[in-house]
Structure formats: structure tokens, C-alpha cells
Image: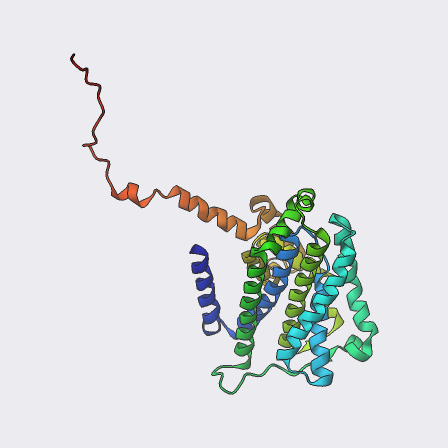
Length: 336
């Protein structure tokens, strides 16, 4: 019940943002939605399954260029380009997942990081498709005639609606056998295998689903920018996504939202605090969060609310005074 109330509150806040925030902040919130979708993929892959990926920026690039290429060269509508980007990114993720089965821990992180490093070079190499260094220019998103506001607000609502859809699908996915299998493989893989859980199947599916979500995020990234270039997907983007998910709370769906806010706004705040070395501020924040909130912002808020609930006495104890007429059992000797 409390979770439903939080979701309802979040929906209300998201709905009123275009009416209370300036236009440039509404534009920033579109990127927050995109990073939240990508962060959700890391929550499923890393938080629930324990596979560390430093290459999700590459899947964002793949999803973005899939939409950009089909829209730029063939005039495919964006509404069809987004699911196409999800499917193709998911297929590539499944293939990468098959290779990743042989790797664990730091080795998996390095392998996926190599993918993120190589992706900009690959995009520049196939310049006849990707535009090379010049990139691809897209038509800006337009609002339908019946929508009473601007095209930017239309894109804002479409993007956040997509966030709700992928969060709902992911929640339904991880609540069942799939989610239990992922957590079992993360916590005790030997015991999970002994209970009949096939690690090859579930780890590969987790990688594919996570890549598909990153592809969706990349497609919306292309739509919001109306321009794509290989330099938009440097390897640092993958690191920022993982760091944001960890700070937000890698074990919670809410952590994807908090992490997206961190990815979008923390560099801007850090640059204002220290224009010479904003990365220093970024690193200090990361250290402080890991010291005081080891389970991220979402986990810290959950523990704080739990403490408040436990500290509050039950309503019955507050409203019902202790009665002085409670009978006291005494021993009465019997006469024979």
C-alpha cells in the first residue's frame, strides 16, 4: 500500500513538472527519464544478478543509431524506431551475454568497458551509415495537433510514459521465477544450480533485457537531441551510468530514478562548486555516499522511513490508557 502511494505521488510530481519548472529544466528532465531507463537495466543486471557492466554506454549508442539510421535514411517514424532499437540492442546484448558467461567480476567489467571504448571508433569507421565524425541530423519531435502544449512538453510526457511502461514490465518480470533465479544466482550460485536454475539461460537473458532497456534510452536520447555523433557516447558515459546507479541504489528500482538525477545534475552542480576540477566534487560525493549510504540513496531513505515507523508507538497504545481495574489474580486458600 505504501509503495502504491509513493508511485502515485511520483506520477503526480512528474505530471506537473512542465507547469512549475522553467523550460530548460524540463528539457533536463527528459534526459533524466532516459538515464532512468538505462539505470533500470543496470539494476536488473548488476543489482539483481551481480554482473558488472561498464559498457552500457555502447548499448545506448546502438539504440540511438538504430533509430537515427532508420529515421534519417528510410523515414521510419519514431514510434516504430524505438521498439526496433530495443529489439536490436537486446539481440546484441544476448550475444554479448553469451560471451560474458565465461567471465566474472573484474574480468567482466573490463570486457564490457572495452566494448564501450571501441564503440565510438566503430561508429566513425562506418561513416556511410553513421555519418562518421559529422554524425546524423534528425527531424525534431513534433507534437500532435490535439496536444495543447509545446513539442518539448510532448516529448517529456512520452519519455516519462515510456519510463512507466519499462518499469512496470521489469517489475512484472523480476517478481516471478525470473527474478528469484537472478537473485539466487547472485547470492549463492552453487545452491541455485543445485536447485535446477540454469545460469547460462538466466544470465544471458538478464544481459539481453538490460541491453534492450539501454537501447530504448539511446533511442530517446537521439530524439531529444535531434542529432547524434560518436563523441556523444564516450566510455565515460558508461562509468557515469554505473556510478549513478550505485549512488541512487543499485538494489532498488527507485535507485534508477535517483541515479538518473545524479547523472544529469551532479556534474552541473559540481562545475558550479569547482569550475577547475568538477570531477573532484563528483568523487567526494561518491565517497561520502559509499561511507554513509552503502546501499545508495534509495536504500538510505528506506532505512530512515523504517526507523521512523518503528520509533512511532502504535495508535492503540497512544489512545488507550492503561486501566486500573485490571483484575489481579490472587491465591485464595481453600477450607476443607
